[in-house]
Image (cartoon, rainbow, N blue to C red; front, side):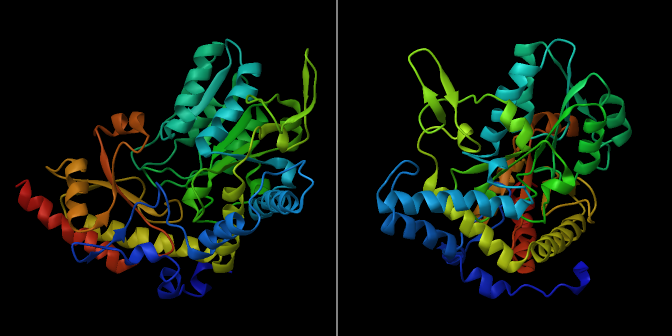
Length: 414
Protein backbone atom coordinates (compact mmCIF):
# COMPACT_ATOMS: atom_id res chain seq x y z
CA UNK A 1 0.00 0.00 0.00
CA UNK A 2 1.38 3.39 -0.96
CA UNK A 3 1.70 6.08 1.69
CA UNK A 4 -0.89 8.15 -0.21
CA UNK A 5 -3.50 5.44 0.48
CA UNK A 6 -2.73 5.03 4.18
CA UNK A 7 -5.49 5.82 6.64
CA UNK A 8 -4.54 8.97 8.59
CA UNK A 9 -3.72 8.66 12.26
CA UNK A 10 -6.16 9.68 14.98
CA UNK A 11 -3.63 11.88 16.75
CA UNK A 12 -6.12 12.94 19.40
CA UNK A 13 -6.77 9.34 20.45
CA UNK A 14 -3.06 8.55 20.40
CA UNK A 15 -2.22 11.55 22.59
CA UNK A 16 -4.74 10.41 25.19
CA UNK A 17 -2.42 7.48 25.92
CA UNK A 18 0.35 9.88 26.94
CA UNK A 19 -0.69 11.82 30.09
CA UNK A 20 2.71 13.54 30.16
CA UNK A 21 1.71 15.50 27.06
CA UNK A 22 -0.98 17.23 29.13
CA UNK A 23 1.56 18.69 31.56
CA UNK A 24 1.79 22.44 31.82
CA UNK A 25 4.56 24.78 32.92
CA UNK A 26 3.60 28.36 33.76
CA UNK A 27 0.24 27.75 32.17
CA UNK A 28 1.66 26.48 28.87
CA UNK A 29 1.12 22.90 27.71
CA UNK A 30 4.34 21.06 26.99
CA UNK A 31 5.37 20.62 23.35
CA UNK A 32 7.67 17.61 23.29
CA UNK A 33 9.99 17.66 20.25
CA UNK A 34 12.93 15.71 21.69
CA UNK A 35 11.94 12.28 20.43
CA UNK A 36 15.26 11.39 18.83
CA UNK A 37 16.69 11.39 22.36
CA UNK A 38 13.78 9.56 24.02
CA UNK A 39 10.16 9.07 23.04
CA UNK A 40 7.36 9.21 25.55
CA UNK A 41 5.82 5.98 26.87
CA UNK A 42 2.13 5.17 26.30
CA UNK A 43 -0.17 3.83 29.00
CA UNK A 44 -0.27 0.25 27.62
CA UNK A 45 3.50 -0.06 28.05
CA UNK A 46 3.44 1.41 31.54
CA UNK A 47 0.52 -0.88 32.42
CA UNK A 48 2.35 -3.99 31.16
CA UNK A 49 5.37 -3.20 33.30
CA UNK A 50 3.21 -2.38 36.31
CA UNK A 51 1.37 -5.69 35.84
CA UNK A 52 4.70 -7.52 35.91
CA UNK A 53 5.75 -5.86 39.16
CA UNK A 54 2.33 -6.29 40.78
CA UNK A 55 1.54 -9.86 39.69
CA UNK A 56 4.58 -11.96 38.77
CA UNK A 57 7.78 -10.12 39.72
CA UNK A 58 10.48 -12.77 39.95
CA UNK A 59 13.86 -13.66 38.51
CA UNK A 60 13.88 -15.68 35.32
CA UNK A 61 15.18 -19.14 34.43
CA UNK A 62 15.89 -22.05 36.77
CA UNK A 63 13.16 -21.00 39.22
CA UNK A 64 10.75 -23.87 39.87
CA UNK A 65 7.99 -21.79 41.48
CA UNK A 66 5.02 -20.34 39.59
CA UNK A 67 6.12 -16.70 39.65
CA UNK A 68 9.51 -17.48 38.15
CA UNK A 69 7.90 -19.62 35.49
CA UNK A 70 5.53 -16.80 34.52
CA UNK A 71 8.35 -14.26 34.44
CA UNK A 72 10.55 -16.60 32.38
CA UNK A 73 7.81 -17.18 29.83
CA UNK A 74 7.16 -13.43 29.49
CA UNK A 75 10.86 -12.69 29.13
CA UNK A 76 11.41 -15.36 26.50
CA UNK A 77 8.28 -14.38 24.60
CA UNK A 78 9.57 -10.79 24.50
CA UNK A 79 12.54 -12.07 22.49
CA UNK A 80 10.12 -13.85 20.16
CA UNK A 81 7.99 -10.72 19.77
CA UNK A 82 10.97 -8.51 18.92
CA UNK A 83 12.34 -11.12 16.51
CA UNK A 84 9.02 -11.17 14.67
CA UNK A 85 8.88 -7.36 14.62
CA UNK A 86 12.23 -6.96 12.85
CA UNK A 87 12.11 -10.07 10.68
CA UNK A 88 14.73 -12.11 12.55
CA UNK A 89 14.58 -15.89 12.24
CA UNK A 90 14.05 -16.48 15.94
CA UNK A 91 14.84 -15.54 19.52
CA UNK A 92 18.37 -16.90 19.13
CA UNK A 93 19.18 -13.82 17.03
CA UNK A 94 17.83 -11.27 19.54
CA UNK A 95 20.12 -10.22 22.39
CA UNK A 96 18.77 -7.83 25.02
CA UNK A 97 21.26 -5.16 26.10
CA UNK A 98 20.95 -1.88 28.03
CA UNK A 99 20.78 0.25 24.86
CA UNK A 100 22.16 0.67 21.35
CA UNK A 101 25.54 1.69 22.73
CA UNK A 102 25.98 -1.54 24.66
CA UNK A 103 24.85 -3.51 21.62
CA UNK A 104 27.56 -1.83 19.52
CA UNK A 105 30.12 -2.53 22.23
CA UNK A 106 29.11 -6.18 22.38
CA UNK A 107 29.97 -6.62 18.71
CA UNK A 108 33.16 -4.58 18.95
CA UNK A 109 34.52 -6.42 21.98
CA UNK A 110 33.28 -9.94 21.26
CA UNK A 111 34.06 -9.91 17.54
CA UNK A 112 36.36 -6.95 16.94
CA UNK A 113 39.01 -7.63 19.55
CA UNK A 114 39.25 -11.25 18.45
CA UNK A 115 39.25 -10.70 14.69
CA UNK A 116 40.81 -7.33 13.85
CA UNK A 117 44.53 -6.96 13.27
CA UNK A 118 46.98 -4.41 11.85
CA UNK A 119 46.22 -3.60 8.23
CA UNK A 120 42.50 -4.23 8.58
CA UNK A 121 40.20 -1.35 7.76
CA UNK A 122 37.16 -0.32 9.77
CA UNK A 123 34.83 1.73 7.58
CA UNK A 124 32.45 4.14 9.29
CA UNK A 125 30.54 7.19 8.06
CA UNK A 126 31.13 10.84 8.91
CA UNK A 127 27.61 10.98 10.36
CA UNK A 128 28.12 8.18 12.90
CA UNK A 129 26.79 8.51 16.42
CA UNK A 130 29.49 8.27 19.08
CA UNK A 131 28.04 4.87 20.04
CA UNK A 132 29.57 3.51 16.84
CA UNK A 133 32.37 5.97 16.12
CA UNK A 134 34.04 6.02 19.55
CA UNK A 135 33.60 2.28 20.06
CA UNK A 136 35.23 1.21 16.80
CA UNK A 137 37.84 3.94 17.10
CA UNK A 138 38.99 2.58 20.46
CA UNK A 139 38.89 -1.04 19.29
CA UNK A 140 41.04 -0.01 16.32
CA UNK A 141 43.54 1.58 18.72
CA UNK A 142 43.79 -1.71 20.61
CA UNK A 143 44.08 -3.95 17.55
CA UNK A 144 46.13 -1.79 15.18
CA UNK A 145 43.34 -1.58 12.62
CA UNK A 146 42.77 1.60 10.61
CA UNK A 147 39.55 3.63 10.64
CA UNK A 148 38.28 5.38 7.51
CA UNK A 149 35.11 7.44 7.08
CA UNK A 150 32.70 7.56 4.16
CA UNK A 151 32.25 11.22 3.26
CA UNK A 152 29.00 13.10 3.71
CA UNK A 153 28.32 15.37 0.74
CA UNK A 154 27.03 18.95 0.82
CA UNK A 155 23.43 17.68 0.67
CA UNK A 156 23.87 15.59 3.79
CA UNK A 157 23.96 12.26 1.98
CA UNK A 158 26.63 9.59 1.91
CA UNK A 159 29.07 9.73 -0.99
CA UNK A 160 28.49 6.20 -2.26
CA UNK A 161 31.33 6.45 -4.79
CA UNK A 162 33.64 7.06 -1.84
CA UNK A 163 32.00 4.14 -0.02
CA UNK A 164 32.87 1.85 -2.90
CA UNK A 165 36.48 3.04 -2.74
CA UNK A 166 36.81 2.35 0.98
CA UNK A 167 34.93 -0.94 1.12
CA UNK A 168 37.48 -3.15 -0.59
CA UNK A 169 39.30 -6.36 0.31
CA UNK A 170 41.11 -4.59 3.17
CA UNK A 171 37.81 -3.69 4.82
CA UNK A 172 37.03 -5.90 7.80
CA UNK A 173 34.09 -3.98 9.27
CA UNK A 174 31.50 -1.61 7.81
CA UNK A 175 29.47 0.13 10.52
CA UNK A 176 26.85 2.69 9.52
CA UNK A 177 23.87 4.51 10.96
CA UNK A 178 20.55 3.68 9.30
CA UNK A 179 19.03 7.12 9.96
CA UNK A 180 21.24 10.00 11.11
CA UNK A 181 20.20 11.45 14.45
CA UNK A 182 21.56 14.86 13.34
CA UNK A 183 20.95 15.15 9.61
CA UNK A 184 17.87 12.97 9.39
CA UNK A 185 19.47 11.23 6.41
CA UNK A 186 18.11 7.76 5.62
CA UNK A 187 21.12 5.84 4.41
CA UNK A 188 21.10 3.06 1.77
CA UNK A 189 22.03 0.44 4.34
CA UNK A 190 21.15 -2.56 2.17
CA UNK A 191 23.60 -1.28 -0.45
CA UNK A 192 26.27 -0.86 2.24
CA UNK A 193 25.75 -4.37 3.61
CA UNK A 194 25.91 -5.78 0.08
CA UNK A 195 29.24 -4.01 -0.49
CA UNK A 196 30.52 -5.37 2.82
CA UNK A 197 29.42 -8.90 1.95
CA UNK A 198 31.08 -8.65 -1.47
CA UNK A 199 34.42 -8.07 0.28
CA UNK A 200 33.86 -10.45 3.22
CA UNK A 201 33.56 -7.58 5.70
CA UNK A 202 31.33 -7.60 8.75
CA UNK A 203 28.34 -5.22 8.56
CA UNK A 204 26.91 -3.46 11.62
CA UNK A 205 23.93 -1.10 11.38
CA UNK A 206 22.84 1.38 14.05
CA UNK A 207 19.06 1.39 13.80
CA UNK A 208 18.27 3.52 16.84
CA UNK A 209 16.55 6.18 14.70
CA UNK A 210 14.99 3.75 12.21
CA UNK A 211 13.22 0.95 14.08
CA UNK A 212 10.94 3.38 15.99
CA UNK A 213 9.41 4.99 12.94
CA UNK A 214 9.56 2.81 9.83
CA UNK A 215 9.25 -0.86 8.87
CA UNK A 216 12.60 -2.61 9.33
CA UNK A 217 13.30 -6.11 8.04
CA UNK A 218 16.76 -7.31 9.01
CA UNK A 219 16.52 -10.07 6.43
CA UNK A 220 16.06 -7.57 3.62
CA UNK A 221 18.81 -5.30 4.93
CA UNK A 222 21.02 -8.38 5.38
CA UNK A 223 23.26 -6.82 8.02
CA UNK A 224 25.34 -9.14 10.14
CA UNK A 225 24.35 -7.08 13.18
CA UNK A 226 21.64 -4.48 13.76
CA UNK A 227 21.22 -2.48 16.99
CA UNK A 228 18.45 -0.32 18.47
CA UNK A 229 16.98 0.95 21.77
CA UNK A 230 13.64 0.49 23.49
CA UNK A 231 13.33 4.04 24.81
CA UNK A 232 13.28 5.55 21.32
CA UNK A 233 10.32 3.39 20.20
CA UNK A 234 7.69 4.10 22.88
CA UNK A 235 9.30 1.54 25.18
CA UNK A 236 11.16 1.78 28.49
CA UNK A 237 14.67 2.94 29.17
CA UNK A 238 17.26 0.36 30.19
CA UNK A 239 16.77 -2.08 27.32
CA UNK A 240 18.26 -2.28 23.85
CA UNK A 241 18.46 -4.96 21.20
CA UNK A 242 21.29 -6.47 19.24
CA UNK A 243 20.16 -8.55 16.30
CA UNK A 244 22.89 -10.84 15.03
CA UNK A 245 23.00 -13.65 12.50
CA UNK A 246 22.91 -16.86 14.45
CA UNK A 247 25.99 -18.41 12.91
CA UNK A 248 28.08 -15.40 13.89
CA UNK A 249 26.71 -15.27 17.43
CA UNK A 250 27.44 -18.98 17.83
CA UNK A 251 31.09 -18.42 16.94
CA UNK A 252 31.62 -15.38 19.20
CA UNK A 253 32.66 -15.46 22.83
CA UNK A 254 30.73 -13.22 25.23
CA UNK A 255 32.40 -10.14 26.66
CA UNK A 256 30.37 -10.02 29.87
CA UNK A 257 30.47 -12.98 32.19
CA UNK A 258 28.57 -14.26 35.22
CA UNK A 259 25.47 -16.18 36.14
CA UNK A 260 22.75 -17.10 33.71
CA UNK A 261 24.97 -17.33 30.62
CA UNK A 262 26.92 -20.49 31.39
CA UNK A 263 26.50 -24.16 30.52
CA UNK A 264 29.08 -25.61 32.93
CA UNK A 265 31.53 -24.09 35.40
CA UNK A 266 34.47 -25.76 37.13
CA UNK A 267 37.29 -24.28 39.16
CA UNK A 268 39.39 -24.36 36.00
CA UNK A 269 37.11 -23.29 33.14
CA UNK A 270 33.61 -22.45 31.94
CA UNK A 271 31.47 -23.11 28.88
CA UNK A 272 28.65 -20.94 27.59
CA UNK A 273 24.93 -21.48 27.39
CA UNK A 274 22.68 -21.38 24.37
CA UNK A 275 21.67 -18.28 22.43
CA UNK A 276 20.50 -15.71 23.28
CA UNK A 277 21.23 -16.26 26.99
CA UNK A 278 24.95 -16.66 26.29
CA UNK A 279 25.17 -12.86 25.89
CA UNK A 280 22.77 -11.94 28.72
CA UNK A 281 24.64 -12.50 32.02
CA UNK A 282 23.21 -11.75 35.42
CA UNK A 283 19.65 -10.68 36.14
CA UNK A 284 18.39 -9.32 32.82
CA UNK A 285 16.01 -6.36 32.21
CA UNK A 286 12.86 -8.42 32.82
CA UNK A 287 10.31 -5.66 33.36
CA UNK A 288 11.88 -3.68 30.54
CA UNK A 289 11.56 -6.68 28.19
CA UNK A 290 7.88 -6.95 29.09
CA UNK A 291 7.54 -3.24 28.35
CA UNK A 292 9.40 -3.52 25.07
CA UNK A 293 7.12 -6.32 23.88
CA UNK A 294 4.12 -4.16 24.79
CA UNK A 295 5.64 -1.25 22.85
CA UNK A 296 6.01 -3.48 19.79
CA UNK A 297 2.35 -4.48 20.09
CA UNK A 298 1.35 -0.81 20.41
CA UNK A 299 3.40 0.27 17.39
CA UNK A 300 2.13 -2.53 15.20
CA UNK A 301 -1.47 -1.80 16.13
CA UNK A 302 -0.98 1.70 14.73
CA UNK A 303 1.08 0.48 11.76
CA UNK A 304 4.70 1.28 11.03
CA UNK A 305 3.91 2.56 7.53
CA UNK A 306 1.46 5.06 8.99
CA UNK A 307 3.96 6.16 11.63
CA UNK A 308 6.60 6.69 8.95
CA UNK A 309 4.23 8.70 6.77
CA UNK A 310 3.20 10.90 9.70
CA UNK A 311 6.80 11.60 10.72
CA UNK A 312 7.88 12.39 7.18
CA UNK A 313 4.95 14.79 6.78
CA UNK A 314 5.88 16.59 10.01
CA UNK A 315 9.54 16.78 8.98
CA UNK A 316 8.56 18.22 5.62
CA UNK A 317 6.32 20.81 7.25
CA UNK A 318 8.97 21.79 9.80
CA UNK A 319 11.64 22.07 7.10
CA UNK A 320 9.43 24.30 4.94
CA UNK A 321 8.41 26.54 7.84
CA UNK A 322 11.96 26.97 9.10
CA UNK A 323 13.39 27.45 5.63
CA UNK A 324 10.87 30.25 5.00
CA UNK A 325 12.28 32.19 7.98
CA UNK A 326 15.30 33.23 5.94
CA UNK A 327 17.87 33.33 8.76
CA UNK A 328 17.70 29.62 9.62
CA UNK A 329 20.33 27.16 8.40
CA UNK A 330 18.98 23.61 8.17
CA UNK A 331 21.30 20.61 8.01
CA UNK A 332 20.70 17.45 6.00
CA UNK A 333 18.75 16.55 2.88
CA UNK A 334 15.67 18.33 1.66
CA UNK A 335 12.34 16.67 2.51
CA UNK A 336 11.75 13.38 0.76
CA UNK A 337 12.02 9.62 1.16
CA UNK A 338 15.68 9.82 2.25
CA UNK A 339 14.96 12.14 5.19
CA UNK A 340 13.59 10.97 8.55
CA UNK A 341 11.49 12.73 11.15
CA UNK A 342 13.83 15.34 12.58
CA UNK A 343 15.27 18.73 11.68
CA UNK A 344 18.56 20.12 13.02
CA UNK A 345 19.14 23.82 12.47
CA UNK A 346 20.73 27.05 13.66
CA UNK A 347 19.37 30.59 13.73
CA UNK A 348 21.80 33.28 12.60
CA UNK A 349 23.36 35.06 15.57
CA UNK A 350 21.88 32.72 18.20
CA UNK A 351 23.82 29.86 19.82
CA UNK A 352 21.97 26.54 19.81
CA UNK A 353 22.00 26.31 23.61
CA UNK A 354 20.53 29.79 23.94
CA UNK A 355 17.86 28.96 21.42
CA UNK A 356 16.92 25.76 23.28
CA UNK A 357 16.64 27.75 26.50
CA UNK A 358 14.32 30.25 24.85
CA UNK A 359 12.29 27.38 23.44
CA UNK A 360 11.97 26.04 26.97
CA UNK A 361 10.53 29.40 28.07
CA UNK A 362 7.76 28.63 25.59
CA UNK A 363 7.53 25.04 26.96
CA UNK A 364 8.87 23.66 23.69
CA UNK A 365 11.28 20.80 24.41
CA UNK A 366 14.09 20.48 21.86
CA UNK A 367 17.68 19.26 22.05
CA UNK A 368 20.79 21.42 21.60
CA UNK A 369 24.42 20.38 21.28
CA UNK A 370 26.39 18.10 19.01
CA UNK A 371 23.92 15.22 19.46
CA UNK A 372 26.77 12.74 19.99
CA UNK A 373 28.05 13.55 16.48
CA UNK A 374 30.87 15.93 17.33
CA UNK A 375 33.05 15.11 14.30
CA UNK A 376 30.06 15.71 12.01
CA UNK A 377 29.48 19.12 13.59
CA UNK A 378 33.17 19.90 13.09
CA UNK A 379 32.70 19.09 9.41
CA UNK A 380 29.61 21.32 9.29
CA UNK A 381 31.67 24.11 10.88
CA UNK A 382 29.34 24.67 13.83
CA UNK A 383 29.86 23.85 17.52
CA UNK A 384 26.25 22.78 18.03
CA UNK A 385 22.80 22.72 16.49
CA UNK A 386 19.22 22.76 17.71
CA UNK A 387 17.26 19.63 16.91
CA UNK A 388 13.50 19.20 16.76
CA UNK A 389 12.49 15.58 16.38
CA UNK A 390 9.00 14.23 15.89
CA UNK A 391 6.98 11.16 16.72
CA UNK A 392 3.57 9.66 16.24
CA UNK A 393 1.85 11.99 18.74
CA UNK A 394 3.20 15.31 17.42
CA UNK A 395 1.20 17.82 15.35
CA UNK A 396 1.70 20.68 12.90
CA UNK A 397 0.42 23.07 15.57
CA UNK A 398 3.33 22.12 17.81
CA UNK A 399 5.76 22.93 15.00
CA UNK A 400 4.04 26.30 14.62
CA UNK A 401 4.77 26.99 18.30
CA UNK A 402 8.43 26.17 17.74
CA UNK A 403 8.68 28.54 14.77
CA UNK A 404 6.83 31.31 16.64
CA UNK A 405 9.36 31.10 19.49
CA UNK A 406 12.15 32.07 17.07
CA UNK A 407 11.00 35.70 17.23
CA UNK A 408 11.89 35.91 20.93
CA UNK A 409 15.36 34.63 20.17
CA UNK A 410 15.88 37.22 17.47
CA UNK A 411 14.76 40.03 19.74
CA UNK A 412 17.02 38.94 22.59
CA UNK A 413 20.10 38.59 20.40
CA UNK A 414 19.49 41.41 17.91
